[in-house]
Length: 248
Ligand code: SF4
Ligand code: F3S
Ligand code: FES
Image 1: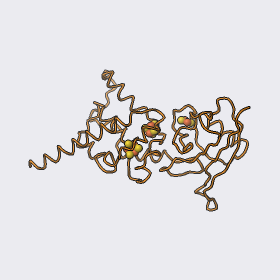
Image 2: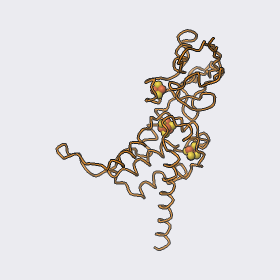
Image 3: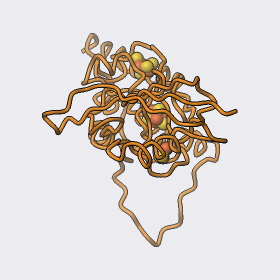
Image 4: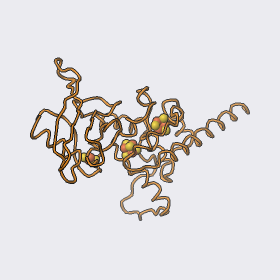
């Protein structure tokens, strides 16, 4: 006999002045290999067509389905109900703007963040379509690729105490982006230019080392190492700058 699952789901439509934040309860019979994506789709099809939640790839690739699952940020499409107790509470990710129910606007947050940290290779070189492809050391290319695997799901931001308290804090995903460009030999930004972007209280010096980000990242990005490296690099940069001022 399979389990009967109880879902407590946060409901609120910020665009409806009559809507009040509350929790709705739904029941479902658990099926073999049921994911939260399957469960939520079934609830929407059979019990409440107004339920809002986001999904796109259903394969842990697009990052759209992140939500708070029993108090922990994770991807709903990759979460099997059998890994959870019979009672499951689903809330939207905090920090991001609520669209409705479990759906949040991570897109605007990530676009703003990418603009803020200037998330592109800065180079004076112009593109020459006839030139030979430039080679990159394999080990270095792997290292950069490792950090490029971020799917911008927002779990690390939702899990971060600092990001929850301070809207101006960049969050681990942004700091990971900068760490990725500091590794890239094609990016000609100087240490001072990187410092201006993340050597602030909104950036790496605002991170209190809580490490919830690494604990919940569904892509297992090495956030702890990267934030540590970035803190050291930016710390040295600040000290060097101080010595230059003293000497002058
Ligand atoms: Fe998601 Fe991990 Fe990227 Fe954060 S670093 S947005 S948790 S994939
Ligand atoms: Fe937040 Fe991660 Fe730093 S949880 S405080 S970004 S170590
Ligand atoms: Fe794309 Fe879950 S639907 S990651």
